[in-house]
Image (cartoon, rainbow, N blue to C red; front, top):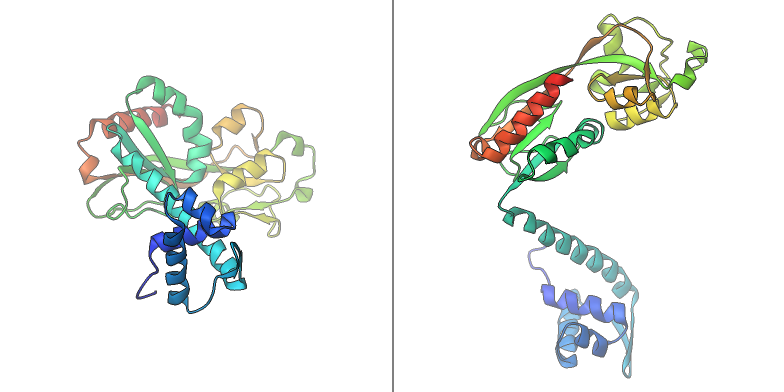
Length: 286
């Protein structure tokens, strides 16, 4: 970590001059004088102890170091702009920030969001997905719904649904001999070792095949006919209903527990209560 950082204005001036190929155009774009842009770039070159531009009369071109810094600076400024724009979300009076996994968001929540919005149009829902469990104490999240949660400080913890798993594939593979079907492997409960430990019957699964860390992609792959997968009964409902997935066994084994964390600052929030009430009702139907 650097002890001292170059001024942000100097980096903005450098980026504009490099992108536009002119100190004069950079000054116009940033509503500054050309001498101010020149001074910013000289201070940046002094800080870096190397030139960033070749100067020839009124024209300028980047040195190798300048090209390198331009890529870094543009990426940094873009990330900063996105982060600042994202802060607008926190100014909305009816904002409710909900964290979940990409798999749950895509396969269960998204198909039901229209119903939620119709029932609770006043809730300005921000759906924040992540592969990792959020730290509710340090992140601005009202509640989290995931299958990999455990209790956290300053939060209430509730198990909402006990899932079940079963082997399934696209109907087009049913005519293919079991031993010739590709086996799709997931992680945690979606690994075939879990099926075997729970006493699941053999359906031709093999140790080799295709591997997925995201259970949502695993479900997508099975629904597209890539092979046989161990799928979540909860998340597979839509694919089954649309005829893109069919069970290979009537047997079901224990799956993950879908749970909810609600931060203490949101526990009495009527928006959070409305969302949780709708969520529990929808899960009860499923």
